[in-house]
Image (cartoon, rainbow, N blue to C red; front, side, top):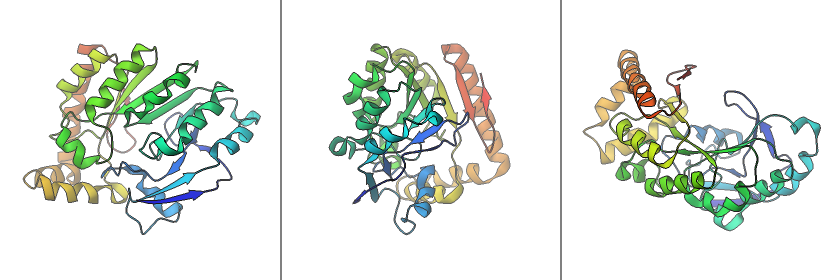
Length: 280
């Protein structure tokens, strides 16, 4: 892992998520090294174009100082803040550098609306701060209960069982927790078991999206499938790259998700295919 300490001039950018808002990313790159990560496109904008995703981290060591200055602007009085959009705020290096915690400490003084997305139970370390926000929600990416696939597809992330326990504890403290069931995998995403677990621990909303194969994202997926699940590779590849197979698969998945959403009374938002968003 190549670690670079960098000085940033700005900490806030416009968020590209549906609904807009603001994005704060304490790190560039991510140690979790997920083989399907859409954020790998950041390499070409940050001087890491020739480096493997997951092999480098830029640590924005002065982020709290700059954020404190920027938050005084009227520009940031409205709009939701998303931490983080192209990295994980609680990747392993956060234990040492605590940049996400410092960001939360600054934001707490201004009480903006805050959303966080993570794959790590390290977030429990900051429970003391999280409880003080008036409008905050936390989403955990959980797209499978298959720990073997998790270790391959999300090699340096927290175990699924630890994420589920983290949600249960956060919900128990009155914090709104959601789940990103994405990407929705052929074979590895067992929606029946996932919904059952989510209901037990108090998940308030589920999001799901199809696998994004654009920008080199498929390369890593294909590589691990070829190595560990060669028998599944032809089927999954055909679903992803045959338009009819793709449409049929995700239409069936959407139908199943909507049925389970009603059965378990958990609201659902679906993003399957380009530009497709559907709510239930």
